Length: 304
Image 1 (cartoon, helix red, strand yellow):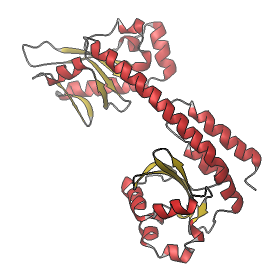
Image 2 (image 1 turned 45 degrees about the horizontal axis):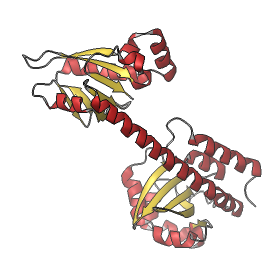
Image 3 (image 1 turned 135 degrees about the vertical axis):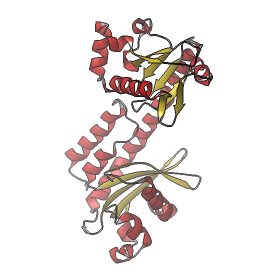
Image 4 (image 1 turned 45 degrees about the vertical axis):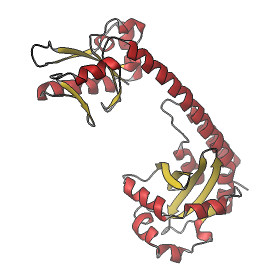
């Protein structure tokens, strides 16, 4: 018998509710962690013999190197064979706690991550295998009970459905984004899309041509869109930060009131003579509409 039916039903409800949540990108692992009572949950993906971790929760400041070690040192192919029937397995059923404590995997990777006990479940997807590892501290000795394993099994069909829904949403979103990029490439204005951290997401053709000009005064690198002049660069980054910090409600209010945030935060970038200075407008993309677009000064930075 699984966990209390109301708790399991509530977890399923929360999982499906997250599908339509803004910024959702997959299964909410925190819901699984809370439902089962795990300290950590790691989702992995295996395709053509290559395994990668897709998401994790509650590892704190874990380094990718440590999770990478876990991926390469754990025998995922054996775990898939053990769970091929659809039933989750406890790692303690084939490796005692004493034996686990003596392994290099535990000493180098799992112990620093406060792990060692796990309930593992894999399921088949069209492009390979998905796996979930519910982890607890070996030192706590609190292994997974039978009812918890039953609940993990009951959740798998919902996880598969949610993963499929997210895949469909990503495909539709990708098609919409591609169409939007095609439209932006037709614009004579230089349009640069940045994420909230200021990193470049997209440059339309006009923007790419602009940045390629000698003496442009701007450059796009790993740190984002940068001005070559130090003072101008600080002003540009401040404008990007201010636009990023506008809450969605503030963005809508700015648009309806015709405030400066809707028209764009202006930043002047000098270029080598005889080129005239660039006048950038940093605009939160959520404020962009057919109305606000007419106010944009060229070239334009749209912040997403």
